[in-house]
Length: 98
Image (cartoon, rainbow, N blue to C red):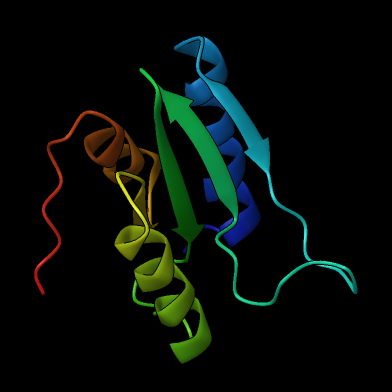
């Protein structure tokens, strides 16, 4: 199973290759807990991606933060487990079962 860091790095490589603005959000004492791992801007829309290993789920706090982000506007906030899934989200092709 790939490490979360490996998945994150592959998504960052994709964003760089696609020419998308992106940043890794690092946790720390001054960071709001539960914020997704990556922020990518594509065509004026913000995409917040929580990266997990396949089979792993976001914590309740992470789910709450993503829902808070979604409710505030046109930003997308999703949990992804692969570069391919991140590409689907960024291309509007991923529809998470709710």
